[in-house]
Image (tube, rainbow, N blue to C red; front, side):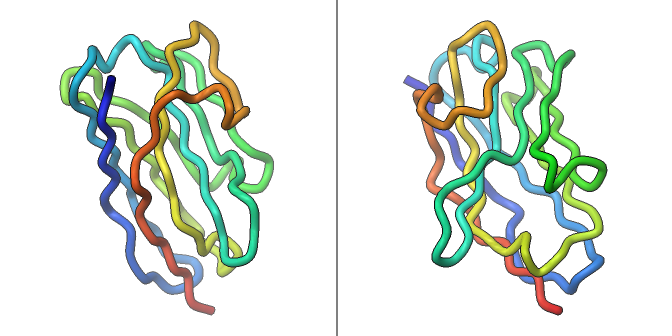
Length: 124
């Protein structure tokens, strides 16, 4: 079992930046591929980004490619999501998730562990 706690959300103006963090505890963090998902008001949860166990591979949703960067620090058991050029449509609760698979995936059902989420609100 791994526990995940997100932080770093908040209110920001369009065009601004935020960095989300997700701290893991419990099992060995480096055994997990990690992902970020989000759920906007009245919307279903959607994939944002994923990173492999070592951090050598990343994958992004088209809607955030070029604006968001996922990274991880296995010495700190933490995964990050740097969000730049934020848009009002990025407003959502952002969740991090952990997956024991060897490959990274955008499929939420593949992730075994989830955090509670952090709210990101982008004003226009």
